[in-house]
Image (tube, rainbow, N blue to C red; front, side, top):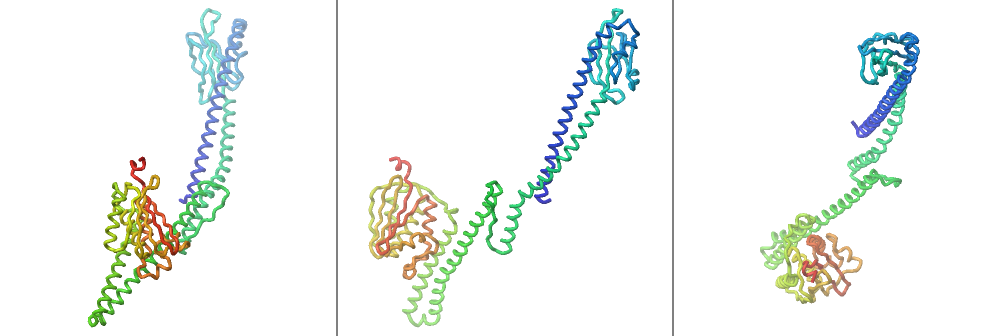
Length: 455
């Protein structure tokens, strides 16, 4: 069963049940009030007739006496304490009431009884008699009028319930259409996306901000996110393929050259081997960076520990200098401690040192210090700098400043993107300031250890 039909059916059923419960409750309440009122009226009538009976007794026969006070649709009896009737009178059409069993009651009795399937009010009043004994004056009256009134009420309630179901069914259909419309539109849009491969959005009306609107708006936002991620993934695959294709092409070219003339010319062989080795290292680094970026921060396996920023930086600079033979000046303005993954922080520092080494032949300056509740590592180079219009884009994957593309030492364009991911993983933040022709300053800010921050 479709959701629309389920909503229509369940809503109609609930409202129908509600109307039925209301109608039944009204009928039962009115029925109880009607019978209670009739019973109370019969009791008052019976009590009101006793003084007249006492005043008239002995003047006329008991039967004639009862005929004076008999109800218009019932009967009256006089029952002795022995349980025998000494007089009875019936109204027209109620002769069968005289055949009911006679019974004496010591106390006043008021109730509704059934005689031949019909309801009657029954009132038995103890009363002293002329011979000194106590008798019962019993008053019986039919509830036929009340029954007819309740029948009319029952019919009216049934008709009203049936008529009331018409707008309930119509409103349930309107409600189901209202709920299903955005869902149907979403399903249709999804099928169009599946068939066409394009990212489409739901048309939304800004008339209300209800849950259905929020659902449609969330769907559109999800489509925006999927399209953005799809574009990024497509661009990433394209760029990665291009970046991997270049070193593979170089390796293939030099390998072919070695096959043709490598064993004849030693210099050519050495040049080919050096080029192949260099490109292999470059491709290895590129692959490692791609794998790290593909993690998207979910599998960094952080090992947090207390890190002395000054010592870690000093050791990293020493190792980097041994590998690159680049002059690096190290300054410590203040010794600070942080809680971080030491290896990830070292890797982050290497990325900026490597960039400074690639794009600057002059001295690199590294400064460690404290700024408020943060410690920092600042790497300054005096290279060519980054143009102002390129500065916001340098953290994008595979983005390289045009001038850097032509440099022999130019990277893959993944270093700063990886730095951004690493910084987010260890809860650090990085800033990059550069002036073209002057140099670049990269700063890594780290949260201080609690006792350091308090001090």
